[in-house]
Image 1 (cartoon, rainbow, N blue to C red):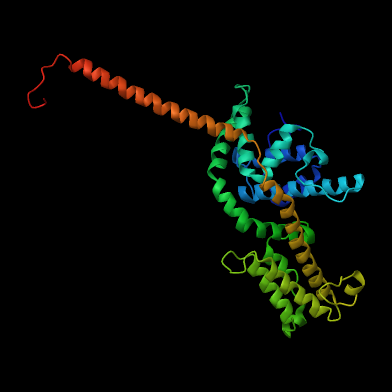
Image 2 (tube, rainbow, N blue to C red):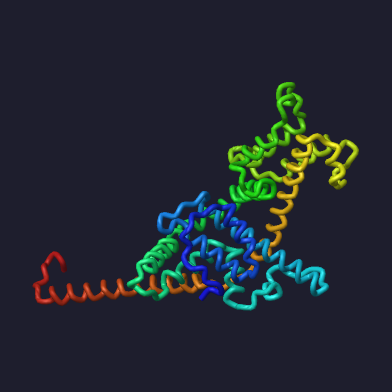
Length: 342
């Protein structure tokens, strides 16, 4: 049973609202339950979502990593230690062995983990007269199949599209509380005033930054997801606005006061871009050691059981063939043997 039963989720899913709500679920075991509560309800009862199932899973994984890192930092501070392995979940409040295994599996193979949870709901005994429970159980059975089919495609999503999608949403959250409609919408909010546009006074450095930002999020561009290319263009604009600073110098609030309103917004835009790239990399470092763990999984048991059933079925088929052969022999034993057969 879950640590915290959130019940059936009947609401439409908005990615930015879900991600924000997930941040408020502080205990990691409850965070895991909340993830299952929302992700497994994807498409239930004709519910709508403004994101793909892959988006939902990927953002959940990132938020779980953030939650672990936050608790790790708190543990280190309160216990006066410099560093310890992120995978030591007991030190960050996960005392239940089942949840310890579940969270580790989720960070290593999130689709497999959610498939197992869906299977639990699908196997759960319910009141068959309660139509909502019946519908939920049927939906979870379908989710088992859906998740099983998307394991390979999800890995490809994580490697490619996931990072850039997360980048835009995180940037949006930092700057516009998730209310910007797209990356283009964010860029449009940083256009210069009438005179800058009329006299074409926008710097080449800012144009290069915007181009690099678009390339970073364009799946068909060779610089898609290229952190270094985006960082290079971002820093070039900042050094253009602050020619007396170096790459290692910090830009402070007093520095911003020397700029006009448009330049100040653009500098903050660039600073948030660098911060978001660093943040994404930090979470990847949290997740990395989980990829090397050997996590016991119920599905592994299921695989062995399936293999056993397959072998058993093959043996049964062989036995049937033998039985049929014996029957044929018995049926034909009294027939005379033809000379040409001899």
